[in-house]
Every structure is written in C-alpha cells, then in structure tokens.
Image (cartoon, rainbow, N blue to C red; front, side):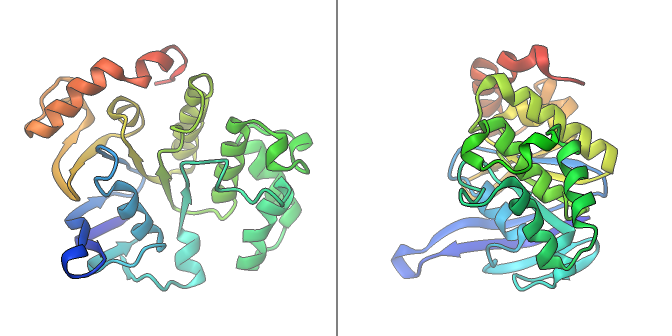
Length: 258
C-alpha cells in the first residue's frame, strides 16, 4: 500500500545543505500498522509529510496503492491518504466550528450526503451531536484530536498517517486516543503509518517498526523482537533502554487495550 524507494529530502544549498531524509526505502502492506521511531530531528515527520504530498522529495520514489505519486496529486490520490497531525491546537482552524471543519474537505472533494457523513464521522470518534457546532476553543485537547481524526476519516481514506498523535495530550487522554486509532484501523482495514519518539507507544500500535537516525533507517524489526530486546543496531538498543526507563506507555498501560 505504501512503497518508498531511495527517498531523499534535503533543504538549503551548498554549505547550508541539510539532508533531512537520506536514501530511505521500505514497504507497508495493505492493512498493516507500520511505525517510524527515532529522536526529534531524525527526519520522521519530514518523511511522513512527503508521503502525504505536503513535502516534495529531492529524489527517490513514492508509490501508494501500487501507483507512483508525486508532490502534485489528483483529488483521488489526496483522498487515498489522510494525515492526523501532532498538535490538535494548531491543526484545526480556530475560526471554524466543528461542523465547518468536517464539511470543508467534503466540499473540496465534491462529496454528497454531507449531513450523514458528518454525523457518522463524529459518532465514530466518540463525539456526540452537541459537539458539532462548537469551536475548537470550546472543547478539550482530546476532543480536538478526535475532531482531527474525524476530519481524516470523513474522506474514507485507505491510508492514515499519524504524526505523534498523542504527544501533545495529557497522559489521562493519551490511552483513549491510541485505543480509538487502533480500533478504527482494525475496523476499517486501514493501512497505518505512525511516527513517534516513544518506542513503547508505537510498539503498542504497530506490528513492524523502522528505527530512524540521522535521516536514515538503521533497522527494521517486528515488534515481538523489540519486546524481547533483540535489536541489532546500537542506536536501537540505546533507544530501547531509554524507552524502558521513561516510557509513557508504562504510565498509561492500565488503560491501553490489546
């Protein structure tokens, strides 16, 4: 469903050139949940934005559902893949009601049955009709992120990109959002590509994990190997040791569902 071939993304020129992503290749199968983990600044979010069509690659290829895509995409290609951003405070237009936030992508795509689609999207993320005409400042951070998820789902994508979707939330609501995303991915048969700096949380969501360091993937492994501490690369082992010491999953574990 997702295939990257020798993808590279660079910014600046000459002495100021920064290689944010360097020669990254991997495949994600239909219905698979695949994670990208690494420290801040390693290129995870930049790579995710390239898959979403928000950041043109410098070189390399991106294929979605078996078809090569570029930075300039058709409506159908943009509808195929949707993204949930890290910050629910910044990703929603503060001057738009929840109703308008959900109606806007439907209008852009020219989709019908707007009323039904909005009601269904809100119900799917656990929001009642009383939230529909509120503004972002009138709802909590967790509810804002549910609206952002509903906005992505309302387009009926086959691929959902998740850019640290719980890191800006309180621990008390992180588990709720993670469980919601896991259930939706399973029920809809979505292909998930998730970025996080928290190794334990991404292991809860994903079956396979790629570890990024300095813009490159240094190791790809199944989550079962990760849980057994069988990482090969020194950076992965360091990341695992750090995650075990500071993991937010441990703090929210009682509320996480298998």
